[in-house]
Length: 92
Length: 390
Image: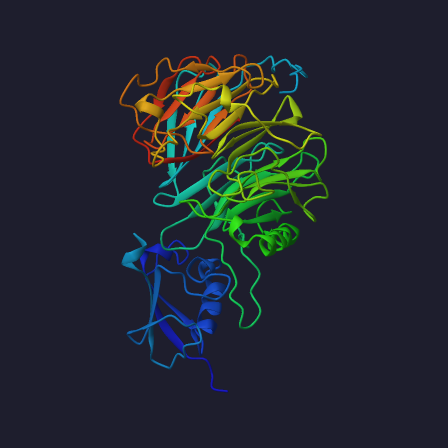
């Protein structure tokens, strides 16, 4: 199994109370599932606010991997990918 | 109607204490700091600015732990906890959430925690929570972690097999609320569902049964079903836990346990006002005194004060007769209403009553609801109030 890449993660203001105000952080994972697990270890509580208990990305949060909108946490992450976790306009 | 017997008319505490109001709103929480005379109020906050805050509750067992049920348009629902009067908040380690569904199954997700209830006085650290969609959660560690009350979910699943369409959603979702713990017995718990009805457990939540006899459900062809009703708010009388009052989508009711049949006491309200509303408040010492805040439930259900004339109605005889009280409230063109968790009382003598409105105002009465004064305005839409005696 390949080692999990460490990638840059950009988060919108909605979750910066978990990241000490930082908009750019790092996390590692071969998939979004792994990445969110790592993020939750680094920033406890952040995962449940953006992913529900059935592992669905919350309706009004958008995840982008390498610029592509992704709704499935099984999506792979490659070295060099940038991940954006952003509040959608639909959320008000 | 069964004869009403005044029981347990208790005396209030001798020493007047400061009263604070915990105000949960569409856009955050506020604390109205009062003083013993209940005349001057200072708004403190906001907490959780921008977040829909459905309920903020103080633990009466330690007098210091606050829990707040919070959600935003984007982020999932959570519970925050404070032990320093709201100066700092820590998020629950494990907020209310359903278990992960089996592979290939579509499981539910909590959309919001709507109602928080401290457990029995003899069970420090125990809390109950009602959520959207319908579910009951329990914490045994002061609100830090929460587990689904599976017995209640099993009860609902069994009833849905009989009548799948009898559990519905309100505009605010499928709400579990009005969790009532019998002060005499920690295992005796009630909960209400909008829509679904009123339920009782005698074994601490393992098993449940609906208890809705006599309660109208005019939105079904079957008008008096076993379950499926829409209780908006149910309270236990602090003066006698065998007396319950219910403000329902279809009227005002009372229940005297061990009886199991609700009596509609709202039919004694003036017909032009009706007996539709959200909140209901029981007197802290007089079992037969109860207040409601009617809203317009006619035609297309405006859910405003009837005729634009907001008023509180009080009964002093268990619902046989009602008296309108509106002194100080807008005499006309007042179109707000009061949601189910946004009308509460203190335990002083005379009793203080408090309203939080859909127009972001807080109104207070120091004379058991006879006259009213606006004590805060320009807040977001008020979703819930709790009264704290300091």
